[in-house]
Length: 315
Image (cartoon, rainbow, N blue to C red; front, top):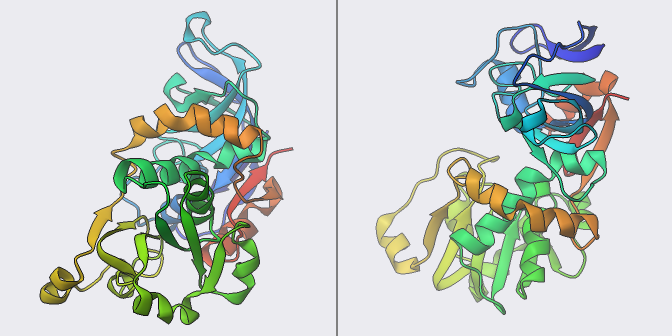
């Protein structure tokens, strides 16, 4: 059986022949259909993340597959399509960059509606994050104007689509010209460097920001006084300086989005999101690669060259 393994911190993954997993009582044997390659995988592989398995280990904190065998009382019948996440996958033990895996039932989320493997492996974080941001954290109302920074990425694209579906007017902002074509249809698309007029207008009710960094407070001034700015990520930097008198005068609430705390809520809303993905009303951008290309994919992800999400296909 083949698997992509990290042999040393900071080293590229290598596809090896590894022993077949043996299912023990209380575990689930799964045929992996697709293994996601995520930023968290890159952090773990770098050796700086707080949680880390012992090298060599099989990477992949998320994936999707089909149940091969499970305990009769597990509720996971053979042939059930499942999302693989949690249970320490890729963090404390081997992950999803492999052909087959034995996991805890807690790491298997059955899908009532079938999805293409690449979508099943990659939708959960962007789709549920977008829902929680808009409806639970920011309390989006129909007719509001929403600016999404990072609108071409997996999470940003999902925020755009779900905000539009909720009746919002949406502006999608991206950092590079080639990303304009990846902003979902039906919204105004702008380059970050050409968005100065948003500060002059201050017509947005809500900013959803995936970039973070030093520019966050400046972008929050695109929002009207009394509006909200929800912060999802920090890909351009982990620190920001706030001048309190100016911030008080701006009167824009900064809302943190902690999806670790929202895990249960994410699972609650997942069913409806899966149905919308299945019928095509929502779409998560995914690039697919062969398992042999895992090292190239991880490097491309770290360099910002992946459009949306990336998955490796064992077969």
